[in-house]
Image (cartoon, rainbow over all chains, first blue to last red; front, side, top):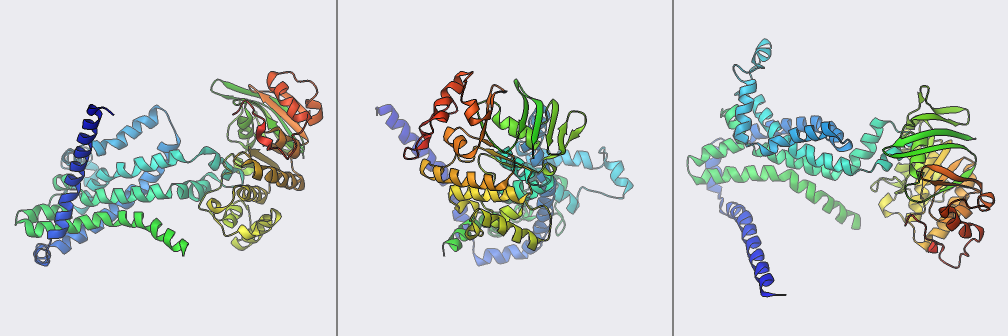
Length: 266
Length: 252
């Protein structure tokens, strides 16, 4: 190995280690520095209310993403062609567009003077500033993180297995629920956890489209923002709660197979 | 039961054109890209022929003039290369999946009977991923039989087995197929498989049948290079003291 290669390797290792430290250190410090006092202060700032708003909105948003996203992922994963490529690009869009852009776009589309305003007014419905706006913002941001990985998993299910199931008497729908979905289950659960994490963490679009109304639209990220104005103490406690909430399904998805494997060994 | 299939399938640049009448167990051989899998796909209803007619016994499965039964109504059980079992599914569930009618209890008891027929009752509660490859083939066979098939299609069923297990699995598969008394197509790369399993042979090349008939007749006059290479193995069956996989077809 010549000196250049050695140098490159050393630089690469140092750069990689630095990045890992940068990624992990703040979370570690956050987790280690939160005190009971911080938590009490955060509670006084409406932490409980924000948890309730976040849990409700993100549960509905994740459910909506799963309901619409599963058939969409199936369609994307099992087909190919220009139409599929175009729809896939559209689904990817929210993952690329900055959340602030999403908030303004949603406000323009569904807000006063928007094209849908009259249709909504006919039902006496108003979206901006309501809990529905929170849910919509979260759906917008979370959808690609569910649909695209799941489409990839469906793409990986081999045709032969599906045809074999059809040939022994199962309808297309039965094959989907009894063969394709179970085969894609690990990817589906991981994608669901990811969508949940994105939904719970959504800040920018919610702030612009839904506003900051305590008990209605003030989700945990908004509560963090507000608490930060009153000092780091309550902000870091709120942030840690938010992190735990975002992370919980992820840990479940990752640890459940491990627990099962341990159980099976016994 | 007789299968009469006269059809043309086009997939991209490739065309498979056949006019066949099959009874009993037939081995299907041919170089890669000959159309073996496409033939199975057309029979089970996964690809739609451009023209022609497929009749199984008294039932028309496909007719260019407006009949195209969906796979689940054809009673054509297909066992693919990877055997088509969900790795996490238990053997009993996998077989019960194929049962077309009855209560959950009836399905289970029928599934147990089918597992019994391949001597795998003891494996009922095992997941497919935990089964030995030859037992996985048994479960796939039981699943096919549970679906009340009138035609069986196997795509290289012994392909995943090592030589030692293969000879034994081949014998068992031959027994099961014999006992099933159904027309069956078994795609294979191994002349030894064809010799033991099937009384007749269908050889495909580039989307055409270049030979079809009882083994001893097919072996007489090789008309293509592939057939000429195949013949020695068919006329002089390799002794089972030697691993039967010494023959290398163009598929490898």
